[in-house]
Image (cartoon, rainbow over all chains, first blue to last red; front, side):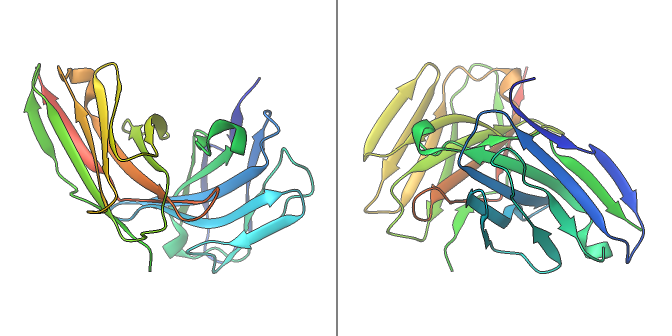
Length: 113
Length: 110
């Protein structure tokens, strides 16, 4: 299917476990982003990528790791999950050809117990 | 620190009225401004973008930009219950990155 997908959609994990959230887009957009959305904070940028093998930190990168070996995939890993990382995570993509409009995936609701 | 500020609301308007949503931004270098709509439990989707000072109209939506005042607004005419959502204002922080406000919740009463 065309578009941007995220998996899993829901995840419950325990403190200290490693968790990887997947993001896949079919448009070949250059730019990809990971955000977390918490009540009262809106969308906060965790990491972003301008192209394959090019990633950089956003506003709240601590405790997260990303990679981008292929243009279409941008996984986000929580190395050792903490309760403060309970949130809704959105992946997005964009390109200069779209006027930098960001297209969002459906989100992953992560609960860390 | 670059910021986009919005009133969290909720903003409540009767059906058929004009809803006015506002935001301010701190980075004078921002050139592009976006309004995203987010229904409860869903992902944000773009409804308007504006680059130039003045007004931009698209159907029932009008975006307004005043760079001198660092102010962006969204007007929704003939508001419908289906417009009830959270509206996120966003500004570019250089090229392809954007910073989002926390959003304003809009409730349109039937």
